[in-house]
Amino acid sequence: MTSFLILLFFILSIGVGVYRGAILQGIHSLGLLVAYLFAVLFYQNLVDRVSLWVPYVGLDIKNTFVYYPVALLQNMDIIYFRLVALLAIILLVWIVTKFIAFGLRDLKFKEMDIQWNGILGGLFGFFSAWFWSFFILMFMSVLTFEGVQTALANSSIADFIILNTPILSGQVFNILLQGLGNLPF
Image (cartoon, rainbow, N blue to C red; front, top):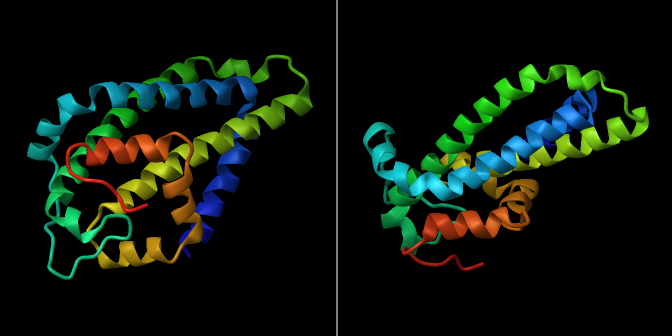
């Protein structure tokens, strides 16, 4: 079911990208890149504040995580707060990008070869879907709920996105595990 929802999200995002066109969807995609860069640069300033405001559901002896070994269980709260700080900055910059893109929505009607406009818009939509899928799945990977962990364990698409996303997988796992340990994969 998780794989089906991921595929549906990709199809819808590609459709939105084709509808918006290359220029407007390109602005949205560029906004995601800028949001990620801001998040990587400034997340550490936010981690302590996030830990005061955002609750973390405690661990139980029976908790198992698909992507984190048992040795890291005592530090899952730190990993969680780092990821929430990253996501908070990404969401904030993404909202600013949405306002900017709203002001530039007339670019959707700029003349461009209609075939390339749709193809590039779809590719940018695919990029956006991959970006959001990665971060949503990463957030799910740190939740302590057994059903969420089971859904991730049973989805080969989720597994592929989390472990094999170019650049993001390595960088985000390094950020989350900085000073805590390494993953076995």
